[in-house]
Length: 568
Image (cartoon, rainbow, N blue to C red; front, side, top):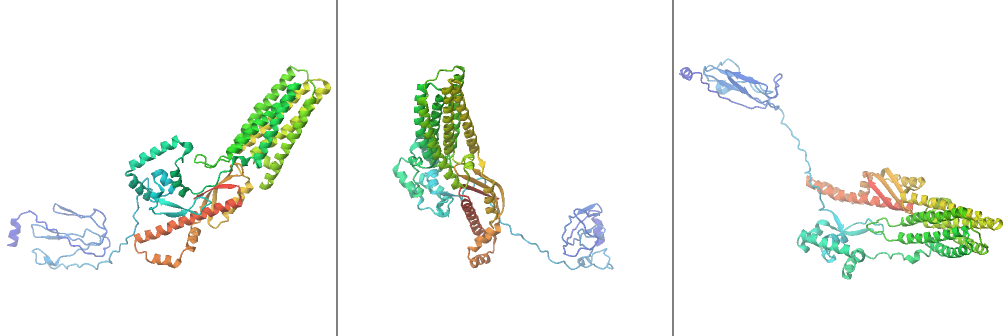
Protein backbone atom coordinates (compact mmCIF):
# COMPACT_ATOMS: atom_id res chain seq x y z
CA UNK A 1 0.00 0.00 0.00
CA UNK A 2 2.90 2.31 0.63
CA UNK A 3 4.17 1.91 -2.93
CA UNK A 4 0.71 2.35 -4.47
CA UNK A 5 0.20 5.45 -2.43
CA UNK A 6 3.51 6.87 -3.60
CA UNK A 7 2.69 6.16 -7.26
CA UNK A 8 -0.71 7.82 -6.92
CA UNK A 9 0.91 10.99 -5.92
CA UNK A 10 2.74 11.01 -9.26
CA UNK A 11 5.82 13.19 -9.72
CA UNK A 12 4.59 15.87 -7.34
CA UNK A 13 7.50 16.18 -4.98
CA UNK A 14 7.18 16.24 -1.29
CA UNK A 15 10.36 18.05 -0.13
CA UNK A 16 11.24 17.71 3.42
CA UNK A 17 14.31 19.62 4.59
CA UNK A 18 15.85 18.60 7.82
CA UNK A 19 18.75 20.66 9.09
CA UNK A 20 20.73 19.48 12.02
CA UNK A 21 23.54 21.60 13.36
CA UNK A 22 26.49 20.03 15.12
CA UNK A 23 29.74 21.62 16.19
CA UNK A 24 32.27 19.19 14.75
CA UNK A 25 35.83 19.45 13.60
CA UNK A 26 36.29 20.43 9.98
CA UNK A 27 37.29 17.54 7.71
CA UNK A 28 40.18 18.08 5.26
CA UNK A 29 39.12 18.92 1.80
CA UNK A 30 35.68 20.13 2.77
CA UNK A 31 36.50 23.79 3.29
CA UNK A 32 33.99 26.04 1.54
CA UNK A 33 33.57 29.80 1.54
CA UNK A 34 30.60 31.86 0.53
CA UNK A 35 27.85 30.59 -1.69
CA UNK A 36 29.97 27.92 -3.32
CA UNK A 37 28.41 24.45 -2.77
CA UNK A 38 25.22 23.88 -4.72
CA UNK A 39 23.05 20.84 -4.31
CA UNK A 40 21.01 19.82 -7.33
CA UNK A 41 18.55 16.97 -7.35
CA UNK A 42 15.87 16.52 -10.03
CA UNK A 43 15.25 20.19 -10.66
CA UNK A 44 15.49 21.16 -7.01
CA UNK A 45 18.36 23.64 -6.35
CA UNK A 46 19.42 24.20 -2.77
CA UNK A 47 21.86 26.96 -1.92
CA UNK A 48 23.24 27.14 1.58
CA UNK A 49 25.43 30.05 2.73
CA UNK A 50 28.67 28.89 4.22
CA UNK A 51 29.84 29.90 7.64
CA UNK A 52 33.35 30.00 9.02
CA UNK A 53 32.13 28.29 12.17
CA UNK A 54 32.50 24.50 12.24
CA UNK A 55 28.84 23.54 11.66
CA UNK A 56 27.39 20.28 10.29
CA UNK A 57 24.46 20.66 7.94
CA UNK A 58 22.72 17.52 6.52
CA UNK A 59 20.07 17.75 3.81
CA UNK A 60 17.65 14.88 2.96
CA UNK A 61 15.45 14.91 -0.10
CA UNK A 62 12.44 12.60 -0.46
CA UNK A 63 11.03 11.91 -3.96
CA UNK A 64 7.95 10.08 -5.25
CA UNK A 65 9.88 6.88 -6.01
CA UNK A 66 10.57 6.37 -2.31
CA UNK A 67 14.32 6.82 -2.80
CA UNK A 68 16.22 8.80 -0.19
CA UNK A 69 19.34 10.66 -1.28
CA UNK A 70 21.80 12.02 1.20
CA UNK A 71 23.93 14.93 -0.03
CA UNK A 72 27.33 15.97 1.12
CA UNK A 73 27.62 18.51 3.89
CA UNK A 74 27.56 22.10 2.69
CA UNK A 75 29.66 23.62 5.38
CA UNK A 76 33.29 23.17 6.40
CA UNK A 77 33.71 20.37 8.85
CA UNK A 78 30.44 18.65 7.83
CA UNK A 79 30.47 14.86 7.33
CA UNK A 80 27.93 12.48 5.68
CA UNK A 81 25.68 10.62 8.04
CA UNK A 82 22.39 8.82 8.17
CA UNK A 83 19.61 9.45 10.54
CA UNK A 84 18.51 6.59 12.70
CA UNK A 85 14.98 7.87 12.62
CA UNK A 86 14.63 6.80 8.92
CA UNK A 87 15.64 3.20 9.39
CA UNK A 88 12.14 1.83 8.63
CA UNK A 89 11.54 3.87 5.52
CA UNK A 90 10.79 1.91 2.30
CA UNK A 91 13.68 1.77 -0.15
CA UNK A 92 16.36 2.27 2.47
CA UNK A 93 19.44 0.08 2.29
CA UNK A 94 19.97 -1.26 5.79
CA UNK A 95 23.42 -2.56 4.87
CA UNK A 96 25.01 0.91 4.81
CA UNK A 97 26.61 1.76 8.09
CA UNK A 98 25.56 4.99 9.77
CA UNK A 99 28.26 7.66 10.22
CA UNK A 100 28.70 9.35 13.50
CA UNK A 101 29.80 12.95 14.16
CA UNK A 102 33.17 13.78 15.67
CA UNK A 103 33.82 15.59 18.94
CA UNK A 104 33.01 19.35 19.05
CA UNK A 105 35.92 21.86 19.20
CA UNK A 106 36.82 24.11 22.11
CA UNK A 107 34.34 26.91 22.81
CA UNK A 108 35.04 30.22 21.03
CA UNK A 109 36.40 32.97 23.31
CA UNK A 110 35.60 36.60 22.41
CA UNK A 111 37.47 39.43 24.11
CA UNK A 112 35.42 42.60 24.65
CA UNK A 113 37.49 45.81 24.60
CA UNK A 114 36.35 48.55 26.96
CA UNK A 115 36.18 51.88 25.14
CA UNK A 116 35.48 55.21 26.83
CA UNK A 117 32.65 57.00 25.11
CA UNK A 118 33.86 60.01 23.20
CA UNK A 119 32.25 63.26 24.21
CA UNK A 120 31.11 65.72 21.61
CA UNK A 121 31.96 69.18 22.93
CA UNK A 122 30.81 70.98 19.80
CA UNK A 123 32.46 74.00 18.22
CA UNK A 124 31.89 76.23 21.26
CA UNK A 125 32.26 74.81 24.76
CA UNK A 126 32.66 77.20 27.67
CA UNK A 127 30.99 75.28 30.46
CA UNK A 128 34.21 74.81 32.43
CA UNK A 129 35.73 78.23 31.70
CA UNK A 130 36.89 80.49 34.53
CA UNK A 131 36.36 84.27 34.53
CA UNK A 132 37.39 86.96 36.97
CA UNK A 133 35.04 89.04 39.06
CA UNK A 134 35.68 92.23 37.08
CA UNK A 135 34.94 90.47 33.82
CA UNK A 136 31.78 88.94 35.28
CA UNK A 137 30.55 92.40 36.23
CA UNK A 138 31.48 93.92 32.86
CA UNK A 139 30.18 91.22 30.53
CA UNK A 140 27.15 90.00 32.51
CA UNK A 141 26.16 93.29 34.14
CA UNK A 142 26.38 91.94 37.70
CA UNK A 143 27.30 93.56 40.99
CA UNK A 144 29.80 92.30 43.58
CA UNK A 145 26.88 91.41 45.82
CA UNK A 146 25.55 89.10 43.06
CA UNK A 147 28.83 87.21 42.97
CA UNK A 148 29.05 86.59 46.71
CA UNK A 149 26.91 83.38 46.80
CA UNK A 150 28.72 81.84 43.82
CA UNK A 151 31.49 79.27 44.11
CA UNK A 152 34.91 80.90 44.44
CA UNK A 153 37.94 79.11 43.05
CA UNK A 154 41.55 80.02 43.79
CA UNK A 155 43.84 79.74 40.79
CA UNK A 156 47.44 80.62 39.98
CA UNK A 157 47.79 84.28 39.15
CA UNK A 158 49.25 85.26 35.75
CA UNK A 159 50.79 88.37 37.34
CA UNK A 160 54.16 88.49 39.03
CA UNK A 161 53.06 90.54 42.03
CA UNK A 162 50.41 88.05 43.25
CA UNK A 163 50.55 84.28 43.74
CA UNK A 164 46.85 83.45 43.32
CA UNK A 165 43.54 85.14 42.67
CA UNK A 166 39.82 84.33 42.79
CA UNK A 167 37.84 83.23 39.72
CA UNK A 168 34.30 81.99 39.07
CA UNK A 169 32.85 79.31 36.83
CA UNK A 170 31.40 80.89 33.72
CA UNK A 171 28.36 78.61 33.84
CA UNK A 172 27.56 79.79 37.39
CA UNK A 173 27.92 83.43 36.34
CA UNK A 174 25.67 82.93 33.31
CA UNK A 175 23.01 81.25 35.44
CA UNK A 176 23.17 84.07 37.99
CA UNK A 177 22.95 86.71 35.25
CA UNK A 178 19.84 85.10 33.79
CA UNK A 179 18.38 84.94 37.30
CA UNK A 180 19.07 88.66 37.87
CA UNK A 181 18.06 90.01 34.45
CA UNK A 182 15.43 87.47 33.46
CA UNK A 183 16.68 86.42 30.01
CA UNK A 184 19.79 86.49 27.79
CA UNK A 185 18.13 89.15 25.65
CA UNK A 186 17.79 91.46 28.64
CA UNK A 187 21.48 90.95 29.44
CA UNK A 188 22.39 91.81 25.86
CA UNK A 189 20.32 95.00 25.94
CA UNK A 190 21.86 96.07 29.24
CA UNK A 191 25.38 95.36 27.96
CA UNK A 192 24.72 97.38 24.82
CA UNK A 193 23.41 100.28 26.88
CA UNK A 194 26.48 100.26 29.10
CA UNK A 195 28.75 100.13 26.06
CA UNK A 196 27.08 103.24 24.67
CA UNK A 197 27.55 105.01 27.99
CA UNK A 198 31.20 103.96 28.07
CA UNK A 199 31.80 105.42 24.62
CA UNK A 200 29.99 108.64 25.53
CA UNK A 201 31.91 109.09 28.76
CA UNK A 202 35.27 107.55 27.85
CA UNK A 203 37.19 110.18 29.75
CA UNK A 204 35.30 109.55 32.97
CA UNK A 205 34.46 105.84 33.17
CA UNK A 206 34.06 105.71 36.93
CA UNK A 207 32.05 108.85 37.55
CA UNK A 208 29.64 106.93 39.72
CA UNK A 209 31.22 106.75 43.18
CA UNK A 210 29.01 103.92 44.31
CA UNK A 211 30.07 101.79 41.37
CA UNK A 212 33.71 102.67 42.05
CA UNK A 213 33.31 101.50 45.64
CA UNK A 214 31.91 98.16 44.49
CA UNK A 215 34.77 97.73 42.03
CA UNK A 216 37.35 98.45 44.71
CA UNK A 217 36.97 95.02 46.30
CA UNK A 218 38.05 93.36 43.03
CA UNK A 219 40.53 95.90 41.68
CA UNK A 220 42.36 96.47 44.97
CA UNK A 221 44.80 99.29 45.53
CA UNK A 222 46.94 100.25 42.55
CA UNK A 223 50.37 101.79 42.57
CA UNK A 224 50.36 105.60 42.35
CA UNK A 225 51.33 106.94 38.97
CA UNK A 226 54.73 108.51 38.71
CA UNK A 227 54.43 112.29 38.86
CA UNK A 228 55.35 114.09 35.64
CA UNK A 229 57.34 116.71 37.52
CA UNK A 230 59.54 114.10 39.17
CA UNK A 231 60.56 112.70 35.78
CA UNK A 232 62.47 115.88 34.94
CA UNK A 233 64.36 116.00 38.22
CA UNK A 234 66.68 113.06 37.48
CA UNK A 235 68.09 111.02 34.66
CA UNK A 236 67.35 111.89 31.03
CA UNK A 237 64.55 114.25 32.00
CA UNK A 238 67.00 116.41 33.99
CA UNK A 239 69.45 116.51 31.06
CA UNK A 240 66.69 117.55 28.65
CA UNK A 241 65.37 120.33 30.90
CA UNK A 242 68.87 121.77 31.42
CA UNK A 243 69.41 121.72 27.65
CA UNK A 244 66.09 123.48 26.99
CA UNK A 245 66.92 126.32 29.36
CA UNK A 246 70.47 126.86 28.09
CA UNK A 247 69.63 126.58 24.40
CA UNK A 248 66.70 128.95 24.82
CA UNK A 249 68.99 131.62 26.32
CA UNK A 250 71.61 131.00 23.63
CA UNK A 251 69.05 131.46 20.89
CA UNK A 252 67.96 134.79 22.33
CA UNK A 253 71.49 136.23 22.61
CA UNK A 254 72.64 134.82 19.26
CA UNK A 255 69.62 136.37 17.59
CA UNK A 256 70.55 139.78 19.05
CA UNK A 257 74.15 139.34 17.83
CA UNK A 258 72.97 138.50 14.32
CA UNK A 259 70.69 141.56 14.24
CA UNK A 260 73.61 143.71 15.37
CA UNK A 261 76.31 142.27 13.06
CA UNK A 262 74.42 140.69 10.16
CA UNK A 263 76.85 137.73 10.18
CA UNK A 264 75.73 134.61 8.30
CA UNK A 265 77.59 132.39 10.76
CA UNK A 266 75.84 134.08 13.67
CA UNK A 267 72.48 133.60 11.95
CA UNK A 268 73.28 129.92 11.49
CA UNK A 269 74.17 129.64 15.17
CA UNK A 270 70.93 131.37 16.18
CA UNK A 271 68.92 128.94 14.00
CA UNK A 272 70.95 126.08 15.44
CA UNK A 273 70.04 127.07 19.01
CA UNK A 274 66.37 127.52 18.05
CA UNK A 275 66.31 124.06 16.46
CA UNK A 276 67.93 122.57 19.55
CA UNK A 277 65.40 124.24 21.84
CA UNK A 278 62.40 123.04 19.83
CA UNK A 279 63.74 119.52 19.45
CA UNK A 280 64.52 119.22 23.15
CA UNK A 281 61.03 120.45 23.99
CA UNK A 282 59.78 117.63 21.75
CA UNK A 283 62.03 115.23 23.67
CA UNK A 284 60.51 116.40 26.94
CA UNK A 285 57.05 115.66 25.55
CA UNK A 286 58.21 112.19 24.50
CA UNK A 287 59.62 111.49 27.98
CA UNK A 288 56.36 112.57 29.60
CA UNK A 289 54.34 110.34 27.27
CA UNK A 290 56.63 107.33 27.70
CA UNK A 291 55.75 106.91 31.40
CA UNK A 292 52.03 106.60 30.79
CA UNK A 293 50.36 103.56 32.29
CA UNK A 294 49.73 100.74 29.76
CA UNK A 295 46.14 100.40 28.65
CA UNK A 296 44.22 97.71 26.70
CA UNK A 297 45.07 99.45 23.45
CA UNK A 298 48.81 99.58 24.31
CA UNK A 299 49.51 96.56 26.54
CA UNK A 300 53.30 97.01 26.39
CA UNK A 301 53.22 100.67 27.38
CA UNK A 302 54.44 103.83 25.64
CA UNK A 303 58.22 103.58 26.05
CA UNK A 304 58.76 103.91 22.30
CA UNK A 305 57.49 107.48 22.47
CA UNK A 306 61.06 108.52 23.34
CA UNK A 307 62.35 106.98 20.13
CA UNK A 308 59.55 108.56 18.12
CA UNK A 309 60.31 111.98 19.62
CA UNK A 310 64.02 111.53 18.94
CA UNK A 311 63.32 110.51 15.35
CA UNK A 312 61.15 113.58 14.79
CA UNK A 313 63.86 115.64 16.44
CA UNK A 314 66.45 114.32 14.01
CA UNK A 315 64.21 115.17 11.07
CA UNK A 316 63.61 118.63 12.56
CA UNK A 317 67.34 119.27 12.91
CA UNK A 318 67.85 118.32 9.28
CA UNK A 319 65.01 120.48 7.96
CA UNK A 320 65.22 123.51 10.24
CA UNK A 321 68.84 123.67 11.35
CA UNK A 322 70.74 122.22 8.43
CA UNK A 323 68.40 123.50 5.72
CA UNK A 324 68.30 127.11 6.89
CA UNK A 325 72.07 127.17 7.52
CA UNK A 326 72.78 125.97 3.99
CA UNK A 327 70.29 128.42 2.56
CA UNK A 328 71.80 131.37 4.41
CA UNK A 329 75.33 130.31 3.53
CA UNK A 330 74.51 129.98 -0.17
CA UNK A 331 72.78 133.35 -0.17
CA UNK A 332 75.88 134.85 1.51
CA UNK A 333 78.09 133.45 -1.26
CA UNK A 334 75.81 134.74 -3.98
CA UNK A 335 75.14 138.15 -2.40
CA UNK A 336 77.92 139.02 0.07
CA UNK A 337 77.09 141.76 2.56
CA UNK A 338 79.48 144.02 4.52
CA UNK A 339 80.10 142.83 8.11
CA UNK A 340 79.90 145.10 11.13
CA UNK A 341 82.05 144.74 14.26
CA UNK A 342 82.33 141.21 15.61
CA UNK A 343 83.00 142.23 19.21
CA UNK A 344 79.55 141.42 20.54
CA UNK A 345 79.37 138.32 18.41
CA UNK A 346 82.60 137.01 19.94
CA UNK A 347 81.31 137.65 23.44
CA UNK A 348 78.05 135.83 22.74
CA UNK A 349 79.87 132.93 21.10
CA UNK A 350 82.14 132.63 24.12
CA UNK A 351 79.13 132.53 26.43
CA UNK A 352 77.47 129.93 24.17
CA UNK A 353 80.61 127.82 24.22
CA UNK A 354 80.58 127.76 28.02
CA UNK A 355 76.85 127.01 28.29
CA UNK A 356 76.82 124.37 25.54
CA UNK A 357 79.92 122.80 27.05
CA UNK A 358 78.22 122.60 30.44
CA UNK A 359 75.16 120.89 28.91
CA UNK A 360 77.46 118.52 27.04
CA UNK A 361 79.20 117.54 30.28
CA UNK A 362 75.86 116.84 31.94
CA UNK A 363 74.86 114.55 29.05
CA UNK A 364 78.24 112.79 29.05
CA UNK A 365 78.11 112.12 32.79
CA UNK A 366 74.57 110.74 32.52
CA UNK A 367 75.52 108.41 29.65
CA UNK A 368 78.63 107.19 31.46
CA UNK A 369 76.62 106.40 34.57
CA UNK A 370 73.95 104.54 32.58
CA UNK A 371 76.53 102.67 30.48
CA UNK A 372 78.38 101.56 33.62
CA UNK A 373 75.13 100.24 35.09
CA UNK A 374 74.46 98.22 31.91
CA UNK A 375 78.00 96.92 31.65
CA UNK A 376 78.59 98.65 28.30
CA UNK A 377 81.20 101.06 27.05
CA UNK A 378 80.37 104.68 26.34
CA UNK A 379 80.58 104.10 22.59
CA UNK A 380 78.33 100.99 22.66
CA UNK A 381 75.72 102.76 24.74
CA UNK A 382 75.54 105.65 22.27
CA UNK A 383 75.55 103.49 19.13
CA UNK A 384 72.82 101.19 20.44
CA UNK A 385 70.65 104.20 21.36
CA UNK A 386 69.89 102.82 24.81
CA UNK A 387 68.63 106.23 25.93
CA UNK A 388 67.45 108.17 22.88
CA UNK A 389 66.67 111.39 24.73
CA UNK A 390 70.12 111.69 26.26
CA UNK A 391 71.68 110.71 22.94
CA UNK A 392 69.94 113.57 21.19
CA UNK A 393 71.13 116.06 23.81
CA UNK A 394 74.66 114.66 23.57
CA UNK A 395 74.82 114.87 19.79
CA UNK A 396 73.18 118.29 19.62
CA UNK A 397 75.46 119.79 22.27
CA UNK A 398 78.53 118.23 20.68
CA UNK A 399 77.46 119.71 17.35
CA UNK A 400 76.78 123.04 19.10
CA UNK A 401 80.28 123.20 20.60
CA UNK A 402 81.88 122.33 17.26
CA UNK A 403 79.58 124.79 15.51
CA UNK A 404 80.57 127.62 17.86
CA UNK A 405 84.25 126.92 17.24
CA UNK A 406 83.66 126.74 13.48
CA UNK A 407 81.62 129.95 13.44
CA UNK A 408 84.20 131.79 15.57
CA UNK A 409 87.02 130.66 13.24
CA UNK A 410 85.22 131.75 10.07
CA UNK A 411 84.24 135.08 11.63
CA UNK A 412 87.83 135.58 12.66
CA UNK A 413 89.04 134.96 9.09
CA UNK A 414 86.47 137.40 7.78
CA UNK A 415 87.55 139.98 10.35
CA UNK A 416 91.24 139.58 9.40
CA UNK A 417 90.81 139.49 5.62
CA UNK A 418 87.67 141.56 5.24
CA UNK A 419 86.26 138.87 2.89
CA UNK A 420 82.65 137.90 3.83
CA UNK A 421 82.96 134.62 1.91
CA UNK A 422 84.66 132.97 4.90
CA UNK A 423 81.63 133.80 7.03
CA UNK A 424 79.33 132.18 4.46
CA UNK A 425 81.55 129.12 4.34
CA UNK A 426 81.21 128.91 8.13
CA UNK A 427 77.42 128.85 7.73
CA UNK A 428 77.69 126.00 5.23
CA UNK A 429 80.00 124.12 7.61
CA UNK A 430 77.54 124.44 10.49
CA UNK A 431 74.73 123.22 8.20
CA UNK A 432 76.79 120.19 7.14
CA UNK A 433 77.56 119.38 10.77
CA UNK A 434 73.86 119.53 11.67
CA UNK A 435 73.04 117.31 8.69
CA UNK A 436 75.50 114.64 9.89
CA UNK A 437 74.02 114.72 13.41
CA UNK A 438 70.51 114.47 11.96
CA UNK A 439 71.41 111.45 9.84
CA UNK A 440 72.92 109.67 12.85
CA UNK A 441 69.85 110.28 15.00
CA UNK A 442 67.46 109.15 12.25
CA UNK A 443 69.43 105.93 11.71
CA UNK A 444 69.79 104.91 15.37
CA UNK A 445 66.18 105.64 16.30
CA UNK A 446 64.82 103.90 13.21
CA UNK A 447 66.79 100.78 14.11
CA UNK A 448 65.36 100.88 17.62
CA UNK A 449 61.78 101.31 16.41
CA UNK A 450 61.99 98.47 13.90
CA UNK A 451 62.81 96.03 16.67
CA UNK A 452 66.25 94.52 16.86
CA UNK A 453 67.57 91.50 18.69
CA UNK A 454 69.69 91.75 21.82
CA UNK A 455 73.34 90.73 21.81
CA UNK A 456 73.99 87.07 20.80
CA UNK A 457 75.89 86.47 24.05
CA UNK A 458 72.84 87.43 26.08
CA UNK A 459 70.56 85.21 23.98
CA UNK A 460 72.93 82.27 24.44
CA UNK A 461 72.90 82.71 28.23
CA UNK A 462 69.11 82.61 28.27
CA UNK A 463 69.02 79.49 26.06
CA UNK A 464 71.55 77.71 28.24
CA UNK A 465 69.50 78.52 31.33
CA UNK A 466 66.41 76.87 29.79
CA UNK A 467 68.22 73.85 28.35
CA UNK A 468 69.92 73.12 31.69
CA UNK A 469 66.55 72.73 33.41
CA UNK A 470 65.48 69.07 33.91
CA UNK A 471 61.89 69.78 32.85
CA UNK A 472 62.96 71.05 29.41
CA UNK A 473 63.89 68.73 26.55
CA UNK A 474 64.54 71.22 23.75
CA UNK A 475 64.23 74.90 22.82
CA UNK A 476 63.08 76.09 19.39
CA UNK A 477 62.34 79.37 17.60
CA UNK A 478 64.02 81.72 20.10
CA UNK A 479 63.38 85.45 19.67
CA UNK A 480 64.76 88.11 22.04
CA UNK A 481 63.65 91.56 20.90
CA UNK A 482 64.88 94.84 22.34
CA UNK A 483 61.76 96.92 22.92
CA UNK A 484 63.76 99.97 23.93
CA UNK A 485 64.51 101.65 27.23
CA UNK A 486 66.09 98.51 28.73
CA UNK A 487 63.05 96.34 28.04
CA UNK A 488 63.44 92.98 26.32
CA UNK A 489 60.75 90.60 25.15
CA UNK A 490 61.79 86.93 25.09
CA UNK A 491 59.85 84.26 23.17
CA UNK A 492 60.65 80.56 22.71
CA UNK A 493 58.99 77.25 21.84
CA UNK A 494 59.68 74.84 24.73
CA UNK A 495 59.44 71.05 24.56
CA UNK A 496 58.74 69.95 28.14
CA UNK A 497 59.50 66.50 29.53
CA UNK A 498 56.12 65.17 30.67
CA UNK A 499 57.72 62.48 32.83
CA UNK A 500 59.63 65.03 34.88
CA UNK A 501 56.53 67.21 35.28
CA UNK A 502 54.49 64.19 36.37
CA UNK A 503 57.21 63.17 38.84
CA UNK A 504 57.21 66.68 40.29
CA UNK A 505 53.48 66.36 40.80
CA UNK A 506 53.76 62.94 42.44
CA UNK A 507 56.45 64.19 44.83
CA UNK A 508 53.88 66.54 46.33
CA UNK A 509 51.18 63.86 46.70
CA UNK A 510 50.41 61.25 49.34
CA UNK A 511 51.46 58.08 47.49
CA UNK A 512 49.44 55.79 49.78
CA UNK A 513 46.31 57.75 49.02
CA UNK A 514 47.02 57.65 45.28
CA UNK A 515 47.52 53.87 45.42
CA UNK A 516 44.27 53.51 47.29
CA UNK A 517 42.47 55.51 44.62
CA UNK A 518 44.01 53.30 41.94
CA UNK A 519 42.83 50.13 43.71
CA UNK A 520 39.27 51.49 43.69
CA UNK A 521 39.25 51.90 39.91
CA UNK A 522 36.99 49.13 38.60
CA UNK A 523 35.01 50.64 35.72
CA UNK A 524 35.62 53.09 32.94
CA UNK A 525 33.73 55.74 34.91
CA UNK A 526 36.11 55.30 37.83
CA UNK A 527 39.08 55.51 35.50
CA UNK A 528 37.74 58.69 33.89
CA UNK A 529 37.19 60.36 37.27
CA UNK A 530 40.69 59.39 38.43
CA UNK A 531 42.39 60.68 35.27
CA UNK A 532 40.41 63.93 35.21
CA UNK A 533 41.33 64.71 38.80
CA UNK A 534 45.05 64.08 38.47
CA UNK A 535 45.28 65.28 34.86
CA UNK A 536 44.10 68.77 35.80
CA UNK A 537 46.57 68.87 38.69
CA UNK A 538 49.42 67.84 36.39
CA UNK A 539 48.51 70.68 34.02
CA UNK A 540 48.64 73.07 36.97
CA UNK A 541 52.09 71.70 37.81
CA UNK A 542 53.18 72.38 34.23
CA UNK A 543 51.90 75.96 34.54
CA UNK A 544 53.86 76.40 37.76
CA UNK A 545 56.99 75.19 35.97
CA UNK A 546 56.44 77.77 33.22
CA UNK A 547 56.12 80.52 35.84
CA UNK A 548 59.31 79.35 37.53
CA UNK A 549 61.25 79.40 34.26
CA UNK A 550 59.98 82.91 33.49
CA UNK A 551 61.21 84.14 36.85
CA UNK A 552 64.59 82.51 36.30
CA UNK A 553 64.92 84.22 32.91
CA UNK A 554 64.14 87.61 34.43
CA UNK A 555 66.69 87.06 37.18
CA UNK A 556 69.32 86.00 34.65
CA UNK A 557 68.73 89.15 32.58
CA UNK A 558 66.90 91.95 34.45
CA UNK A 559 66.13 93.65 31.13
CA UNK A 560 63.76 90.81 30.22
CA UNK A 561 60.33 92.20 31.09
CA UNK A 562 58.01 90.07 28.93
CA UNK A 563 58.48 86.29 28.56
CA UNK A 564 56.38 84.13 26.20
CA UNK A 565 57.11 80.40 26.59
CA UNK A 566 54.96 78.38 24.21
CA UNK A 567 54.54 74.67 24.99
CA UNK A 568 55.14 72.22 22.15
